[in-house]
Structure formats: structure tokens, C-alpha cells
Image (cartoon, protein in one colour):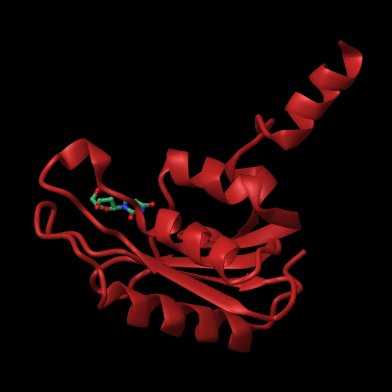
Length: 138
Ligand code: THU
């Protein structure tokens, strides 16, 4: 269920577009911006930060998670990602895992095929509960 209003989605897209203008993407030429609503009402953002050593470049979601943690933590409620034209972009697989770790129950993502939950875009996810369950059993 999409409990986030269309106005909030537009606010998140606007923050993601603004963040995208800060991207450092000289190698791919593919700037990305992201924004998320935190469960305390904060909005956190990020942009991709590439590197001459291509493989160590950071996705926009990495800088968003850094901002989340460095500004007080919390859980992500809703997330939007845009490309250099400001259009909705699907987060890459690795970044879905990054987001999952910090997701609120039922976290929502703005996707090309509509609003989806984190469980829909990363089904049967490996995460903190997997580790806890194993540790508790051993
Ligand atoms: N990129 C992101 O920042 N997030 C994604 O979810 C998809 C890909 C970046 C990584 C790289 O800097 C550029 O897009 C091209 O792959």
C-alpha cells in the first residue's frame, strides 16, 4: 500500500534532482541523484561519486546512506532515484541491498513500474534478521 502522498513523492523527486546536480561522474557521464524520507521526517540525499580507479566509484545510494548515518540514523520510509535528465531510475542490485539494511518495514520505492515495496524489489532478501536467526541458533 502506498501511504506516501503524491506531494511527498514530488518533494523526494525534487530533492533527488537537486542532489543529482552535485554528482561527480566524469567517467560514465551518467549522473545519479537520490533522496529518501526517514522515519523521523528528515530527508536525506546522495549523488554518485566516481573515481579514476573505476571499480571504487560510489553509487548515489552510498552517499545517501552515509548522510543517513552521519545525521542521526533512522529507517528509510520512501526512496526516489533519478538520472541526469531527472527521470526515475531503478537502483542497481547492490544498492537495493544497501537500502534494505536501513529500510523501515514496508519501505516504498519510486520505480519505472510504479510505487513498490523494498520486498518486491529485493525478494527473500539476505539481511540483519538472517544473521540474527543464525546466531541465535548457534
Ligand atoms: N549508479 C548509481 O549511482 N546508482 C544506481 O543505482 C545505478 C548506478 C551510478 C554508478 C555510476 O557512477 C553510474 O551510475 C553509471 O553506472
